[in-house]
Length: 314
Image (cartoon, rainbow, N blue to C red; front, side):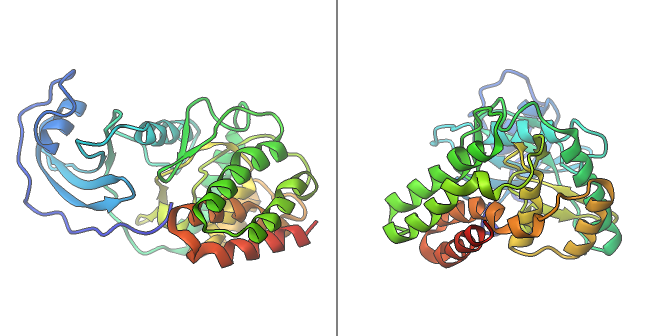
């Protein structure tokens, strides 16, 4: 969720380590030592690449040359569960045939280790494959709206308490908490809040035909789509049982190369319900409120436009 981290190319900085040992203190040694202990594999070097929100981004390399991407919390920070939520979400998304979600190699409350993706320019064929894979992931479904683990979107807690009724779930667990936080932070005015509250109070009428819970990524902006030579992989989810239109609306929010190809291929597998275009703003309002909470009033105008558009569609 949010801005791209500053990343330096992988270099030779960092120290090597011996073979990892399970059960080792997660705060002992260098990052290479800690990843070795987590994976029970020899990591010969690790190098810090930058920061994103409250965690550190690094590259690492195994003794056999396999390259890894590592997210970690600083030694002095108190674990919040954010890395555990990301790992569990990736594993859950991966439990369906052809899932595009990257799969974690190892994780604990302070470390998350992923394969390093060699990125390429997007192509129409890769976009079409992503559309079909996303449709298949959504169709795998979920037991309820929400999830059975505490959620996060970026560094912010996400209420995943399971629910049966999507409009109420969306209003009370996806819109209202971030509206309240944005108002408390002063990023939205009371007048702004009243406009958003009109949407919150009208979700039942705005939602369209009822749909079963879909297995969604939950934070599918274009920065969380990594293009490979023939396909794409998805990273950094806020995964949960949700409305499938939410992922597609978020892809459109900040733009995605060949989005029309993604959507057309998606519709071949799982046609969207009638009137979906009129609900795009409704589904974009949640991530925009999250952005207001994270980055302040810079996103106020866009969030208010989405609220007004969503309400007009009722």
